Length: 172
View 1 (spheres, one colour):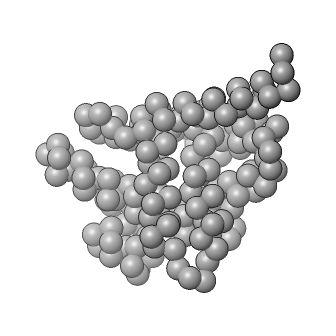
View 2 (view 1 turned 120 degrees about the vertical axis):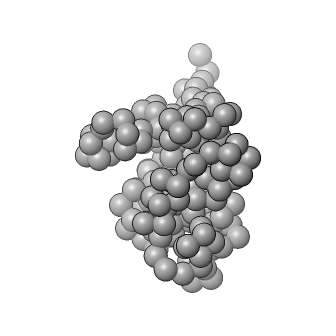
């Protein structure tokens, strides 16, 4: 066994996010829904393009890439799953701790993830808003492509977006 085997195993394990379908879209009957990794790319894309100059774009991009990583271990838990917010947060925190342990810069990666979870920095809050914008835009794509009624996703996104550019882009 080489010294790189545990690191390789952690890196490969995280790649399973590419195969984890977004649970909300599955529940809503979307055919061939995006993966959690595809969603994370969408959030990163929005951050890259829309990040205000006053924020640290690189930090926000890192947060966007990391924000749903614990779902590779706990799954994509939605409000319809009957899991309390506290239980979801605890499970994701435990998963994040395990995932980041042993990675180069793991403690910093966990701190970035916590910025998103707690909304403790402007970058973390901005990424959270981009997460909601991505959901709204994806709902619009699915509605048009698959003739589905996905207003619940739009309503959810809009309820969490402050007035301004992101809310306007979401379709408010």
